[in-house]
Image 1 (tube, rainbow, N blue to C red):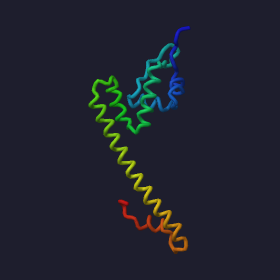
Image 2 (cartoon, rainbow, N blue to C red):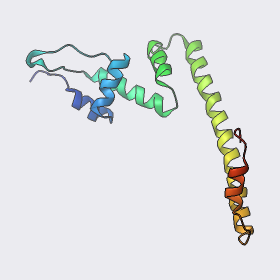
Image 3 (cartoon, rainbow, N blue to C red):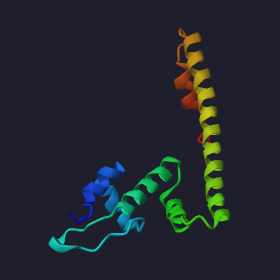
Image 4 (spheres, rainbow, N blue to C red):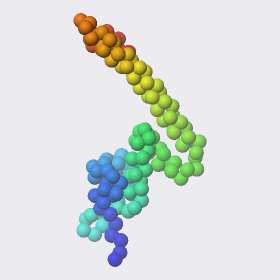
Length: 137
């Protein structure tokens, strides 16, 4: 039996995404949209599944769709300097976000402790700290 290709639903299921995600990637130019075959259905190949999986894995690592598009342009791996630059920038941003989250964790930990320690205080220390915080806190 000849391979008749995959429907968009087959690709979506195999890649673990919704059909609308694939359509969105097509509109963004991240995934090529195949021409219509007999019966007016578009038929996709295994390469489409691989590409969607690549996009999803890159997003899971924190890459934006713009960065993913650039990585896809570099996917032959020959321009490693550019690939390292993109991944390095993502790594630095991830480290900044982790530092911010650690700061938030410390502040919230202190606030919860203060709330417990000052249970009889007129005003909750958590509410007071939020209300008194400046716009850049």
